[in-house]
Image 1: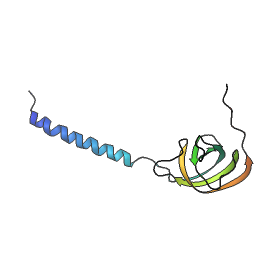
Image 2: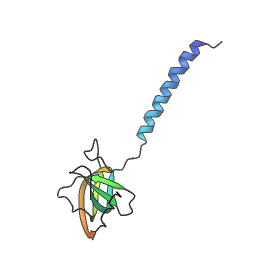
Image 3: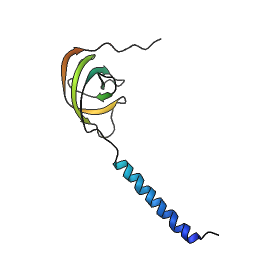
Image 4: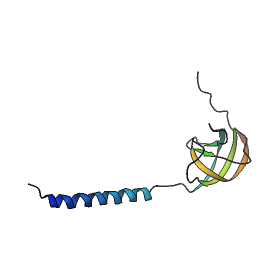
Length: 114
């Protein structure tokens, strides 16, 4: 027969250890703080948002910029990680600090097949 007093002590202790470990995992989460990337400017689903698809196609950032760069041009952006909820729903949201055109054009994005 098990000693219920020991079980009453072990369960809360294990629960506290589990909660502490879960809190520690959140602190170790990797975050991008600064971004510098070159890529093609695309229109996002939201009218005020733009997308930057990196030249290697590996990453898509979403941002709002004023003045807006021309679509289908190559630009270099400097920015920082967006904090909080973003109005842009596609890509990784960033806050633009600066952007510069490269005087290059992108190939038009592929049209979906019908």
